[in-house]
Amino acid sequence: MRNEQPLLEVRGVGHSYGERYGCRDVDLDLWPGEVLAVVGESGSGKTTLLGALSQRLRLTAGSVRYRLADGTVADLSELSESAVRRLWRTEWGFVHQNPADGLRMHVSAGGNVGEPLMATGWRHYGRIRAASAQWLERVEIPVDRIDDPPTTFSGGMRQRLQIARNLVVSPRLVFMDEPTSGLDVSVQARLLDLIRSLVSDLGLAVIIVTHDLAVARLISHRTLVMKDGCVIESGLTDRVLDDPQAAYTQLLVSSILQG
Amino acid sequence: MITAVTDAFETRAILAVSGVDKTFTMHLQDGQRLPVLQELAFEVNAGECVALGGVSGVGKSSILKMVYGNYAVSCGSILLRAHGRAVDIAAAGPRQVLAARHDTMGYVSQFLHCVPRVAALQIVAEPLLERGVTAGEARDRAAELLTRLAIPERLWALPPATFSGGEQQRVNIARGFVTELPLLLLDEPTASLDVRNREVVTGLIHDKRARGTAILGIFHDAEVRDAVADRVVQVETFAATAEAAV
Image 1 (cartoon, rainbow over the protein chains, first blue to last red):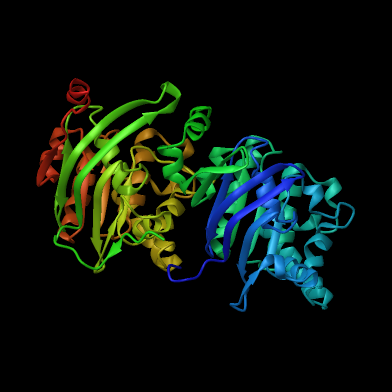
Image 2 (image 1 turned 45 degrees about the vertical axis):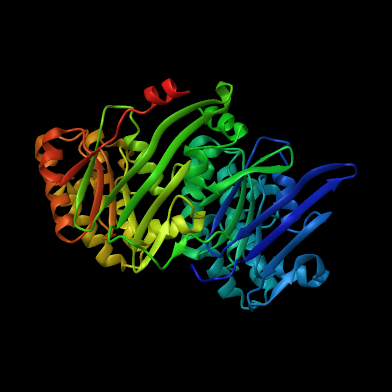
């Protein structure tokens, strides 16, 4: 993994809402197989940063370069809309905080997982259904629920289904926005453990936004701390959490309730 | 990008700590500075076990955490030499530290940080799987260590969250000892163990040394320390003298 090139090279990235900026001057590199946590309180700009990196929000400053599966490097702002759509179909995933934003709530669970496969050209119904069933099993959803829509699922199951829908096409880069924060603590632990093992089995690169430092500690290699739209500290997750250098990071770490 | 990797090294030691200072700046207490270590220097060679000595609170754990990359180093260098290369952990970037943890150094903390829901056997086998050992062999080696550390087989399939403190610590030790890395850091590995298991751990440390592993550890128990350590690096109380100098 050491000699590889970065998957994502982010330089001076910013996004402004009119006069106000949501995030600015962000530099980062992300390598294949690496999990990067972006932490900070609400309003710190972490979700704006995720939006800007994933092209859901327009960059107002800086550049994001992405190494495609074929090895070429693309400046994301220069890619055509159809090329970006192709990235979403084949190389990228986005796990929303609210599963309803990432699922089709009135389509069956099997359909939710099968759809992305169909979008990449799968045609054989039996194979699509078998792959969907396999993924439901992998995210610990009973296969006999394959024909039920997510409206009938619990919050934890919906979130696991959203993860299956994202990972079924073997993406290379997955963005996650507070994937565990709407869930009960016991459900959170199960989901985190699932994300952790899938990420390492599949060698995914992940950028995960979370306000929960325990989540960052459990699944990320590196952590960025944001405040007022800027990155104020970054480094190895252990180092940032065990020996925080910035005043604000020390405040965040000292505010954790010890479990 | 900062490059902390060099091909040149003057020392044979696996670990060479030199001129290391550690000062904590506590921003929440009006930026109070808490100097803990100054001008720390020592080396650990292959096949040698070095104990860190000194009173409680003197910074022994901080030293292990700096070597492992959990704590930032205020100044000085921590040279880790293995596989024909040297890395200065004090200056290395996150990916270099992760690579050093993968290839060069292991760490047994005082407590097991459990991942919920993962079985004891899996927790011990994981470091081997991450290094490309086949699932079968990883399981066999994990089972062998758990047996040696007297964890009953009926517990192997259970997550250690419900185990006793001593059992958790033995799982933690098994996880730390299962890999063969050039440097092993031990933070009071025998703290919550009974006499019989202390002897098992002493034996494990002897085995590692005999295979050429360099070991740096904190051993509260004088008997264990005398049994395993080749020498003791005495960590001096520094805070008091620094305050006098200010």
